[in-house]
Image 1 (tube, rainbow, N blue to C red):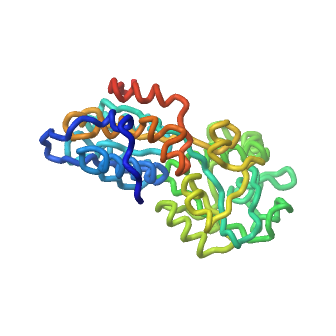
Image 2: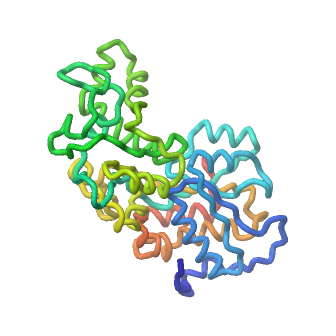
Image 3: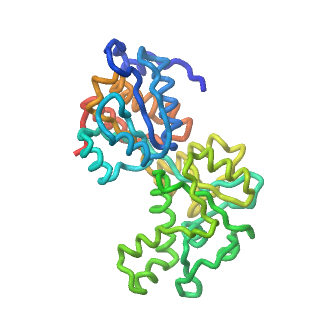
Length: 343
């Protein structure tokens, strides 16, 4: 991809010249496939517009990226972890056990989770959380009772949906997108359909019922994708009746191949996400290893560059690729400047 050079004002944050000698002179980043395109754009612009080398950006999923990040301090370890969810307490603990005690959390903006299918496939135009739960849960409510999921077609439980076999490609458990999918779609559908109430009435504790609500069927109609969105897209290409779960930005760059459904009557867009109307959205993050600032040339400068108004603001190039600008971006910029770590 090609970008014009940034204006002088945008370059002010990265005016430091790369003169520091180090065992490694490139910032190393790994993690979320959702954050990957944004980080890649910023890395290329950073390399083009500063004296620092272009950072190396790898994918692998939020959990995998944070696991690498937490393996230790030193030039053999990554400097930044991209994540489409907040770091978990157990990951903070794992970091601390390996000497990674000072972590700077950077929220770059927001993204939406969308449900898309082949442009020439069935008319998957509108979903509710209940629809996805009824399609993908191992147990659902039928005639007031919680039973093993009998549904094989979307129209079996909602006559407004296509008379097509149920097949959904969803993010694997190592992806941050999976957590958002579970919490904002499947768990909501579990409550809306009365399944959670039935589980508790049947003797489950509330905690056990919440966990059971997040389970998906294992009969081949719900398929985990452990790779990135390109793998999900390939699966959709090969299965005309299938739906897939994508980040909004990925969908917006593949509208020639995919059509998107509304969720609870709201179409996904940067506008509906920014307004808080679209129900399946989430913040995006990256995490900086503070101990590497001053050791890896350009690490702090890259972080400052990433969240500059000219890049992550509402009129920047990241917004053109689907990132919803964070209204508290100025506070994030100040946090990086001060190198404020998580409490």
